[in-house]
Amino acid sequence: MLPPIKLKQRTCTYDCIVIAILLLNCTSHAAESADLQSNVLIVSDATVGESDPPAFDPPAPPPLQFAGTGLDTTATTPLLMAAANPVNAPATNDLAAQVKSLQANVDGLKASLEKKTYPTVKLTGFFQADAVWVRQSPDNRLAIVNGAPLGDIQDGADFRRTRLGAVGDVTENVSYMIEMDFANPGRPSFMDVFLDVHEVPWLGNVKVGQWRQPFGMDALTSVKELMFLERALPFAFVPFRQLGVGFYDNDEELGLTWAASAFRYPADFFGGNVGDNGGYGGSTRITGLLLEGDCNETVHVGFNYSFLNPSNDLVQFRNQPELFDNQTPGAPFPAPADATLPFFVDTGLLPTNNIHLYGAELAGTYGSWFAQSEFMAANVDRTTGSTVNFWGGYAQLAYMLTGEHHPYNKKTGVYGRVVPDQPYKACCGCGAWELAGRWSYLDLNDADVRGNQLQDFTCGLNWYMNKFTKFQFNYIHALLESTPGNKSTADLFAIRAQLDF
Image (cartoon, rainbow, N blue to C red; front, side, top):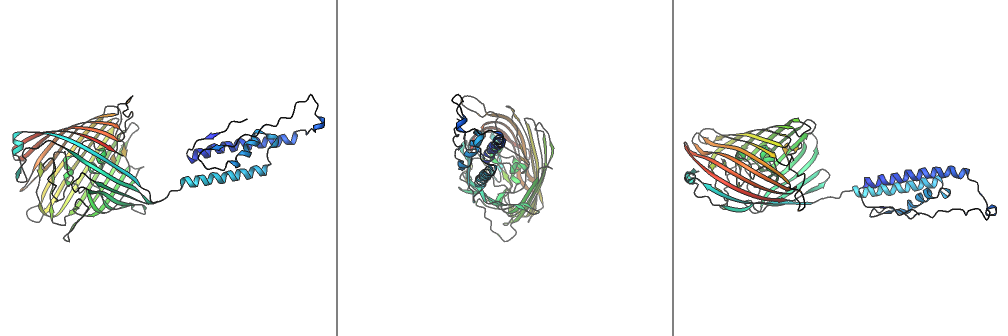
């Protein structure tokens, strides 16, 4: 007797392959049985002697058991009977009918598995818990920033980000994302809230809502995948999240991405903007992958431009020494008083007609090495006084001690998440370890504007415990020039625990 054949529930493709093999075997046996029947000698019971062995009639095999697939097994049983007992094989036309019935069952199963119902919803979220310790030189406590001394900066701990979101599709070509942050100023604040229309002729993809505008590689890298705790100092110029409409697309074969957007400017923590005197902006970004090798060799370049006409005729550029950054670049909305670190560089509110922003990117990987750099400049046309120019840049370098690498995302033109080859477990695996260093600079001094100059030298150690859990340590040496010739320093130590899902 043939033993029952049990197939666990797998993908539709796998089941179809198994069934096809069975059909081929059954068809082969049926053909052989037809030839056998045409040549077999039919002997009556009377001619069988006492010494002749009894006729052998093999028992029918049990039906196939397709666990959890919902297939009609009655269509498959006769096929195996034909294979096990060629003498009693069904006629060819019966076999064809059974094959047709089985194929109908397979097609129905495949259609039911591939059918997708809309809308779809997936819950996402992550948190970042930070702790920071600060040591200042005496001159740093007295350094003047926007008309007031820095004072004695306190140590602290807080949730840098705590977010919940939902992503999904409402049809085959329309997707969405709704994300809120419960740690950022506003509590909760609107983060990425948008809809995406895909496969649009000439444009590729069209996005409507609030999202990170196409300007800068550092800004468009997910905060869950940053090499350091915060983005570099020139992030102060980026228009970042604004409410508007834009399009984007890419060519993976050529390694190109392009994006452009138009938006209201500036947006508050809830995506709002009010004003009839201007209040618009636009941004564009073009990137290219110049080199792609077999051993993770890549070279990336990018160019950015943005035009801003603030609705309140004011602009303000400022930043902290890359810790507890409240992410309000270019927006004149004051940060709440609970921000742990004060701003080291700050232009104050500047009456402005419009702003031109320029950016250039250069990055690359070689095996486990990863380098990234950017230059940004802002040209501010003030309503009173002369036009002023500010600029900044950074360069960072990292090496994966355990051999992993930063993968390049051809659809977005940024480097993505490190996935440990051996995630940490109690019995084995140490995760992925990375050493990193960065220099960044921001100059907010020009003409009569004294926004200060700041340089940061950062060393980092990252432990990627698994794909979704990361721990980071940063040491930052901040060199501040608050007035010509008046330099001061601050040393900052920070750790972060991060988990996302």
